[in-house]
Amino acid sequence: MTGAVTKRRVAILISGRGSNMAALIKAASAPDFPAEISLVISNKADAPGLERAGAAGVKTLVIESKPFGKDRAGFEKLLQAALDEHGIELICLGGFMRLFTAEFTMAWYGRMLNIHPSLLPSFPGLDPHGQALRAGVKLSGATVHFVIPETDAGPIVMQGAVPVSDHDTGDTLSERILEVEHRIYPEALRLLATGKVRIEGDVCKTDGSGPSENFLVAPVVR
Ligand code: GAR
Image (tube, rainbow, N blue to C red; front, top):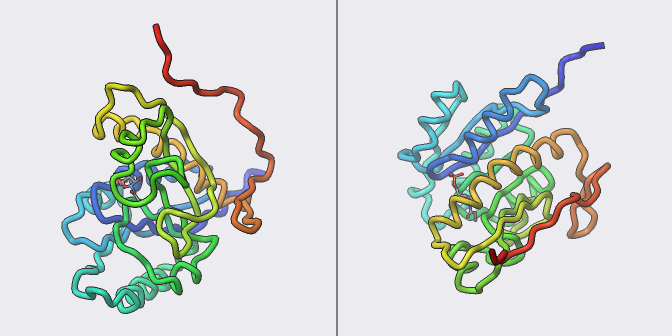
């Protein structure tokens, strides 16, 4: 039987450039991808990602958060109404720079992913690349995790590592990590959409997974 894949309805929330959003849209355009990007919502009207999403034929919405100030619940009420209206089942945050109330994150617990450009739990919050460089770590990377009330924390679904060199700047490191982000975010969404991940306490486990065969060592001296 060649039955069509059941696609979970996903909303991507952005605030800016939207390169992770674009990677997710691209992956989801494959006929056998188990999720469709049904909606992109930005909390900023001038987010460049909006144009990118529109050009890819994805429905976009702007819900400005600024007028709500500290009234996070007020903003989330509009957000939730839009998600309901579009029958959204899963949320991916892609550079969405607005904190949620604990109530909103718990309502979406297990159904909302975030990506952060560090190997969490190292370097959460702002300027993770600068934090990594200042700490002198030799490996960094990106993490896709379930969203919990605490910022840049929650059960880890997938990580990808990159070497950090003595010559790296915030820009070069961020560029290298971004490549990994674009690789792991669609894979993590695929796992979630196909029901292959489960949360056990604070930890996310993946059906059928094993360790990858390669490992990464840094620095290498030639
Ligand atoms: C990405 O690097 C993402 O990991 C980061 O913002 C950037 C958004 O870029 N997110 C965080 O730092 C979350 N704490 P993009 O708009 O091109 O996807």
